[in-house]
Image (cartoon, rainbow, N blue to C red; front, top):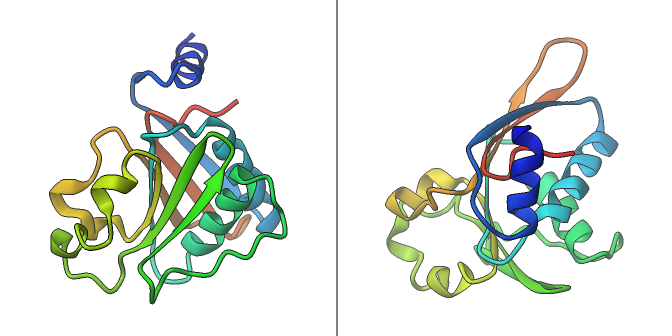
Length: 164
C-alpha cells in the first residue's frame, strides 16, 4: 500500500511518491490535531510550505506545529511577521518559522539564513516569495475556505502528505 511505503520512507528520512490528503478542519482542535500528526513525521531537511489567504490559519497552524514538535503546548510562539524568521529547538532538530509576507521575492532570503535553515526543518508562510528556492520535495499545506459544514480545509500535497 502506498500509504505504508510513504510512512516507512518518512521514518527513514527517504523520499516517497507524491501524495495528496484533504482534511476538513471544523475547529481549532482539528487544526491542532493535524499539526500534531504532521509534527510526528518531520525530520531535518523537511520543508512545510503554508499557503492560503490572510486569516486562513497559516500562523495558527504553524504555532500548533511548532508546539507539537517541541512537545510544549504552552510555548510562546510569536508571529515572525516583523522578524521574518524565528527558530526553535526540538528533540533531534531545529525548526525555522519564516513569514515571507513582507518580502518581494527570494533576494532577501540569504540575509535571513535560508541556506543554513534548510539543514533543519523550515516552515514557511507565503512560500510564493521563495521563487526558485522553494524546495521541490516540500509538503505544501494550503488552507482554503470550505462549505457550510466546516470552516476550512487543509490540502496537504507532497511527500509528507500521507498521514496515519
